[in-house]
Picture (cartoon, rainbow, N blue to C red):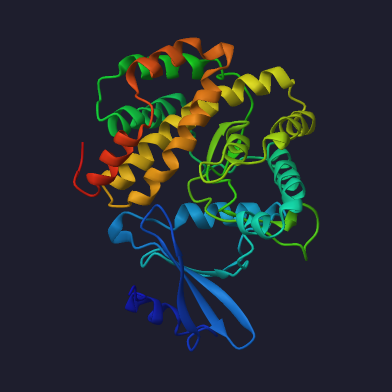
Length: 333
């Protein structure tokens, strides 16, 4: 059973939460852990991002304060300690989009419309100076994870060349702050709040300056759930109108960004099994492959489609079983 690090008790000594009951709330694809603190009439959350594992709290605190300053519902920070990698913050609850949609399917359109409205609003807001840029070189390198981990080869240069050529078409496309984990398992529904504040934001420590549309693709082409097909086109149109971007331009940008993102996620999910011993992510690969195929169908991505089809095999049962069978056996590539 996972227990909290002793440093957490020390961290909480001078706070009202020193005597709170502490339970594991969640972990994620990184080495961070989240703990819920419970007192008789209130709760809070501790993020545990141990520096010894390479985690750092500064990006999270920087973006949290920025988002709160814009009037969005990021967790309010109560205490931070970058040396120990601990953050005490507001508990926004458990009403994740994914749970809300399962329990009340009729709310899906409302939730996603509000999330899209938030993204359109965020696209008009200033980007923090400290936010790194998700530039072409970084995006190409990220897309190469598919070749390295999903395909088990680092020789697919025609894929990286085609990704780079496609991304260069977005060099003059407007940029926005992309939270980069904007999906149904990182968004909370807060019905007691108003307007855009009804969307609770989590997992934004990897936020970067990126072409507008990156988070829109993360939301609508979710690696973990299928958004209702009938909602996709209206939500894309809603974002285009609110952002004053020609629909055709947004459609092309989202196809390019979606292909890059899908390639990255194929590699990340394979690596999480092969390197980090988390085989559950393999089950998500077929959905991501389908999303990649959908993006590659765009006329602007003919070269990338040819390169992917020549170098990446579809996620057959045999390939997926091989990724599971070799779970945790590859220290590096």
